[in-house]
Length: 233
Image (cartoon, rainbow, N blue to C red; front, side, top):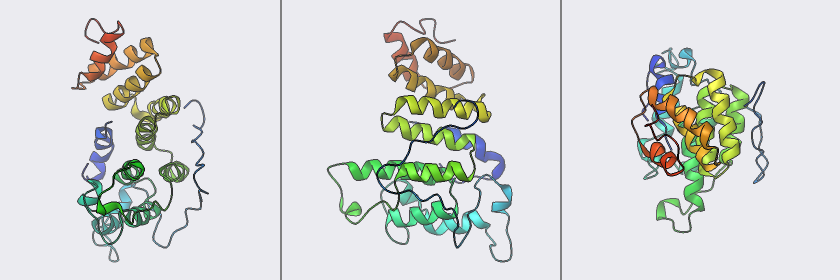
């Protein structure tokens, strides 16, 4: 997902594919102590605040681009190369400066999963996460509990087979403004299939397809269990 201007950002976040009233409890990071102190030498800046992208004398590219142009390369996002040092080091710099950066959070989830893999290329020999992915999400939600962050958090939880927590994250995202986002309903419906909550999954599948979601994998999954026989329309 490319960095886009502020007016496009909230629509673009929904392209990352695979809680209740008040606040959603973020799953506690048990792998290591997670500092929620957000003070940083540069920032922290809000990815979704248009002022973070305004050019200034000190930051002619804007604060977000000043960080990402150096510390969040395309190769990093593809897990095929580095930027200035280790992927984990540049990622940590990015998410300390911009705690709710969507591509950074998604990369933290993917990098952590990649480092758990038993087979690693030489690219990952010296990689070690500065913080767990869950810790980065805790920090992002403390910094600013945006709907978009909860969507990516839901994807992270689903990746890690934490389906009940993923469901709650998606519901929180919908509560906070993702009601008309097809991708959020689609991902929620996929999670509900895992939870065997088929009637509720069908409900959100129908919303997703009504909103124009193009992929039919969810429909096929529900068909196997006797749901969406009419096409999820």
